[in-house]
Length: 402
Image 1 (cartoon, rainbow, N blue to C red):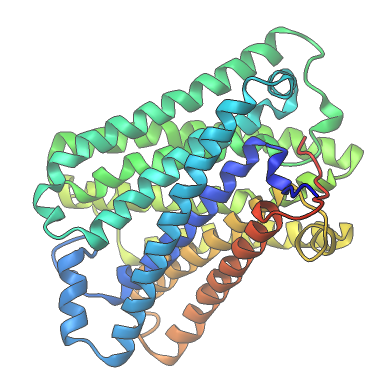
Image 2: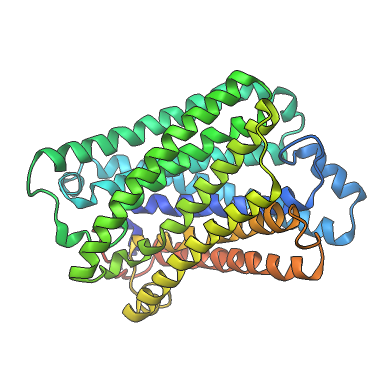
């Protein structure tokens, strides 16, 4: 008897398994970001965490323990899935299946590769802040390397996009409009936005004017590219879906707007912070609260759209709770992670900073519980999907991604 697993039939969308784990590491970092005091710094570091552990309440210590363990586990899972994917991807490139993908609409699934690379760099930076003593003392020396790494990943993403657009825009009839009936073509926008938010990190944390300005300008380029590409892909895809319905295996992509909005929202917050600290550009708490409200409004609209279609199609019954497998199922993780992160920002940087609610009050914890609820659901989903796709069984009924 030969044991197989669904992931033996490789698709670049399996890079989303790495992305989802990296995103969950960020959700655990939110505990430290908003509950651990870090005066004089935009983010908490090892020294802040140890100080809070030494003097904090039992509840804070419990939150720190959960956050640190969660970050460690998810960063390890993120890297394990990244390295597995790179090996599987290199082997897959030697097959006819790769050439078939390169000459179809599914060529944009290759953007999951740079997306995962950018997510892992972000995840490693978080791990460094949490686990490496004294990192903040040399962080200014690390920012140029971080900018270079994200620019290299961005160029990698642009080269794949260039190959795809160069092919479909110069050869008539090679893009199948009937297979454009999902938001799968927004994956390039997702990858570009992940690069953009990474480039914005030095803008928020550095005190060097050149580094801040470089972070703002480069993140603006990739963020704008993500927005323009995303809008074009969204409108053309929606037109195709109205004609042909939504492709069932790609239906989770209807909610890809949610992580894109979270990433671009954090990019703008990082840029705003850097411009305020370094160039005295003022943005008040009320404006930030309204901005985050708009982001969340868009996200919940697409959440309602996606869940409606997925329920009508019976997607959860087949691909989450059932025996069928599709690599695209990992696209379900990113929206839940993104909502958890954005709700944390909305509560803390929006409502608390604007003085609308009290930090650690009853309303605060009720709203924070929603973010934690999304987080826990996505932890369960990642573990469930990993078991479905990577556990060896006698037979694995896999649905190939288009």
